[in-house]
Image (cartoon, rainbow, N blue to C red; front, side, top):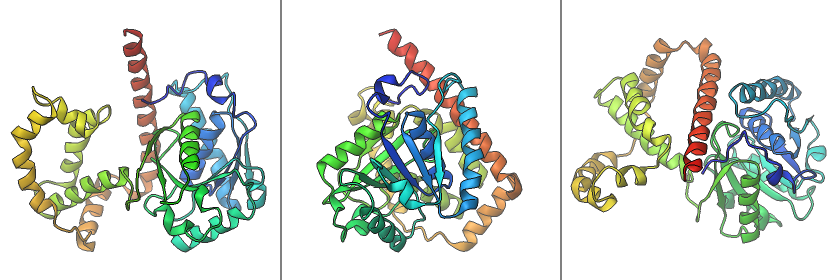
Length: 331
């Protein structure tokens, strides 16, 4: 269950007042992680080798913190811990209790970064990556501290969407997995554990299945790209905002999930035959859908629409939190 981000977190942060996180990379994900940890009372050192990127991160973070207050997800009277912006990776890493790497999805770069981390951080520090699809074993195999390396993959943006995936390698220690999981709970996230390595982890595999099917439907011209978006936005997305797929079908038949499978299993099995065909992400198809999107939203307005998205997410989270309070209060 999502933590109520507007509640007093003194119980959660009592152990973290002197704890320090090094966030490596100040792009959208790194900046969002900085908000997550600073709101939870951690000392945050946000590193980027690009001074311009750091300069852009500071006003972005201030703007998002204001959004949280306006949406009722935070209190103006409770100031987050000040974020330290640094272009020195050693300054960021020294004395860190936890590292959240947010670099590009380039395997060789991650290998170099984590090799550098192990030479600077203290022996108890957990080393986590925000990677969306590279399993931990790929960049930790040759590290001396490989048992302390784990993927902690957020959902963008993590300061608004709490789901994070804790995905260990075969040699990540149980202590590291439990430590990362508890830290995510402490800073207000909603962690799940990926029990064994799989490309794309859980969220992106679920998302990828839907995107591939959306591409398949667009390729066959069964519906316009905007109508396909509408089917998710005004259909599946409404119930998926508070239920997962198994609970959805469990509630969609009088006898629960097994009854649903009995009624509709053959239909889904037949559909899976065509859905199992590989989607190549053909350039002509992507160009066509991109053109369709640009007819709806000019490229110059993407940042404006991203701000709108964040406002909608904040409003939805506030609504869900209020509903959960009322539901729990009536129990």
